[in-house]
Image (cartoon, rainbow, N blue to C red; front, side, top):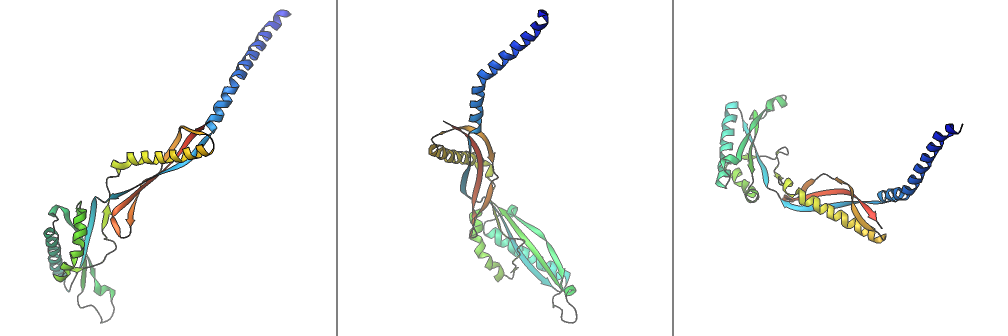
Length: 236
């Protein structure tokens, strides 16, 4: 009968030993759990003002004529004058392109005998795509010279000048590092107030980069902004 109890005794002893070892490691496990649970979540901000390095400058114009042939001739004349104006002010032919003329039959919009004298109306665009930002700013106020030459420039909100910044990838690493440092400073202030210190990063989430005009009157200067969210361990 005693032989029957030997395996049970051995099993019980192994279980007791296992519980003893687990009990010895339990304080370390609790400490590790508490350490992992002590984190602070902060946001880091990085901002920079940069200069636009690419300009899309559309010059929209209108041509009116009684016949399609007259409209075509008027378009060629206006486009030639705009191109001549741009090249005379320092833009290369490679920087200048055109958007196809949009033609409208104005008579189709009217009923009765009161129709416009000129039946056809065309809207065209000469587009400047250039990295000469300062030159664009200098030449823009001079477009009144085209009006003196008979070019009917028009305001078209679909074709407005765009000042762009294309060098984001060049400044991304430094801005992320700056945002991370800003977040660490906030975490250190929190830790200092609570009598603790900041440890390693537990997790980090990079926000998206935004590029906006500095203000509505300064489109050639951009404000680049990024916000990161970072969790730091807090240590005693």
